[in-house]
Length: 221
Image 1 (cartoon, rainbow, N blue to C red):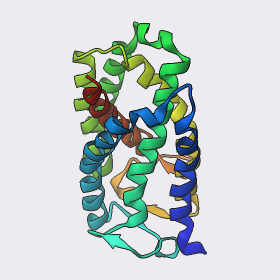
Image 2 (image 1 turned 135 degrees about the horizontal axis):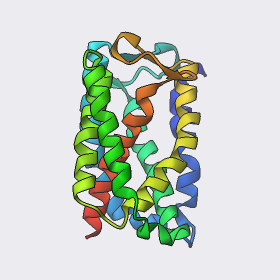
Image 3 (image 1 turned 180 degrees about the vertical axis):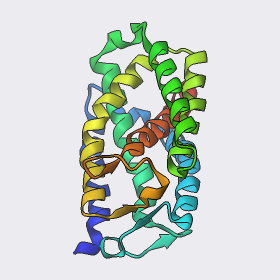
Image 4 (image 1 turned 45 degrees about the vertical axis):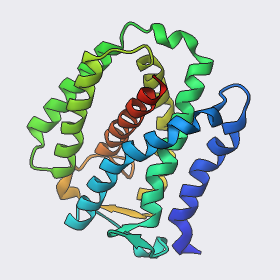
């Protein structure tokens, strides 16, 4: 049973969002034609990054808790992770659009992107020798700069969605890192953790979701 732990985490991560995809308020199932290209094109760069970091030993996977099925050195569960997590988080994004319609009027979104870009640049400057930190925050500098220079009404929804998604994120990542299923080489990150979760992980998730939502919204236009 232990070898299915990661697979079960993937399953339960997507279960509730999938079941509520047919709810008549958010109508998430109607997003599927534009959602799946977003998951594909938003996820591929991160899978390449994931595979490279796995080979280089930045992180690894506990063989005790995975099925052993791998594609390009990545457990099949890890590949599914880049489908189920964005699916669940973009479900939250869809809900934000329904439940918080005034979020499109937020005037402070550019300030958020500016702050994240400056913070990320500082992290790169101070921790350039730690590859996980370097790559994560370098990517965030680029993406948040793009968001800052290209303000959209949906940015307010996205910020709310990301903040809400941190709740399930810490639950899922907490399981992955406390069991532990995913093992991190702390020489390649800042060494600070939220409980058992590396500091960089929440920003890694932010970059992933930002890329997904950019593709999603482009498909909507």
